[in-house]
View 1: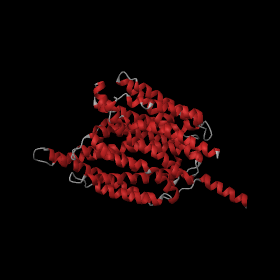
View 2: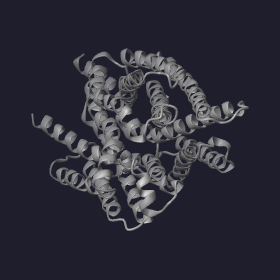
View 3: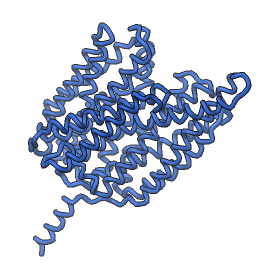
View 4: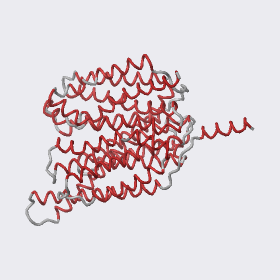
Length: 484
């Protein structure tokens, strides 16, 4: 009975810390324009509040596998939450933009390390047969927090000012640390593997460069036409290739890429990354279309997308429970097929489409994503032996910002090129109607690509099987031998 109670307390501790750390990811999105006016900076400069945050998270997540094996659960959780709190306080007290950006980057360090720590602990705490429900409950935090971030941010900025975006988080972060000091227990063992400095450097250049390159391509709207961006991505890919080769040769790899030898892990993570690409891209492209040809304001566009985002988060625990009962195939295969249908709808969207149908289809999109993301990731991790949990969670969490940045950059690039191609064919004056039709054509091009991605995801899903950890199989074999 006491073990169950302690397990619940550990889960509560994790969820409190994770909610406010993840909420912080999107809390500033609506406030960027306000910050441009307050600090008299350009859009390119203020964008570092978002790009820099993602960049730091991407660089740190591969290192999390090493840190998890070097420090106890208590040390890691309390340490990263303390780092997050420090960054929040600095940002709240910022006198200029460099000080604000510094606080934001320190926050990113805490957030980037927190998620792998929690996911690794949950894998160790709960057996495979209930992990769907547990991961689904944690997924509620991961999805729900960023969903309400922009809406909450708009209210706070309008009534209290931008500093309160940080001030309101401080007491909750402090409470999470105090709660952990009193109740959090250690999970797993500390093994202290050797730290390979060259691997850390190679992964930092590779992951950091990819996130920066893809994000810059998406933000500029020029796609991959910039020589600078192509060089950065090229160097990053080379660094990652060298990094992977090194991981296969050294005795104690920073990230053990052999996890991809487990077929369900490789398939599950592939589905996870592709769906992340589609989700992140839709969250960028759809608001642009709502504010363009459909003529809605930024706040109204955010509110129109809110029901789908909330549904995504709220359904995560439900999908987790269904995963435990039904397995991955009965969830992921139908969900990816529905995603194909949604992409067909968006690839033929026009300003004449009733707004209620748009909201409804967007909700179906987010429901399908909820039925795909957590089940595919949980099933992937379920197949790994315990000693690979830190590596499996670190790789999956590292691929998330890369997939998001890649999705946004490719979608925006395709949309921009489709838009420009339509405009180049026009001989008459560029009226508002022509510009709207051009953007509609660009969105169609982007979602044709999304349709191809979702068809690929559906095909991969057909080969998904319910994963069984080698540790579970080993326990079963030993039990049979002993009984025999």
